[in-house]
Image (cartoon, rainbow, N blue to C red; front, side):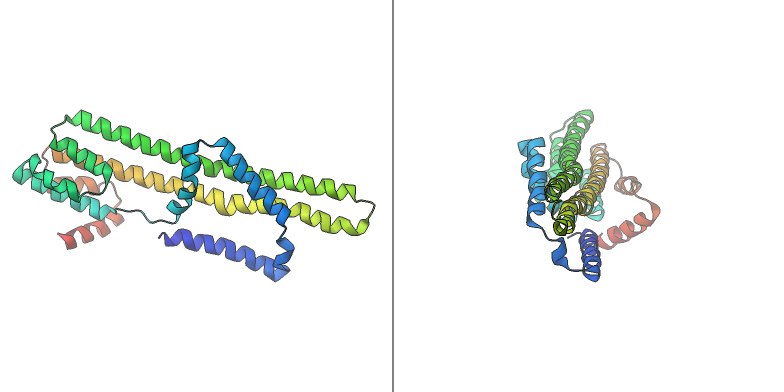
Length: 260
């Protein structure tokens, strides 16, 4: 689990609740019709604006935000260096027995094409197409979060307008103006809260995770191309570590050396 994301969510919600509780009652900020307008309206508009495929992935996006990435750099570099060593000793066909052990479909596709003797340009083109597909898919899913960030405040304003209409209808009774105004403003609060605590931060986190995944896959492509070219394992290791800064290299190098 991504602890940083979890801590961020807890802090955001926790301090907002703390601020509410220290200045009044939490019940003051609970209004069922306002919740239905903001959440129901936002959900409905999101479904209306999304393709079926993206709508089905929407809930999954929340899980991705709090999920730690699968393979880390050390595992990938270790694997690529190990395969390059094996290929130099026994030829590229010696890598065939490694295929069943590989879970990452991106790496498996590239390694299988290398074993099959595909041209370097063909392998790179196929992997680049797969990478582009990943970027497009992630961008499309993240677009739902951005749409939600704009829709939630809008529906909050819709709820406020509804509340103001109800308030204006009862101006003859001054005692109802305060409560009616309070309810009218709560929907704006809900819309702003959902946009700034849920949709916008999650969109930013998804974007950063996508960027990291793209960078990692570019490193994998470089490593696979180096294996096919028959480069020295130490050269490949140095090349792969060049994708990271000096501080990251020290940590990666220490872990790689400890596992060799």
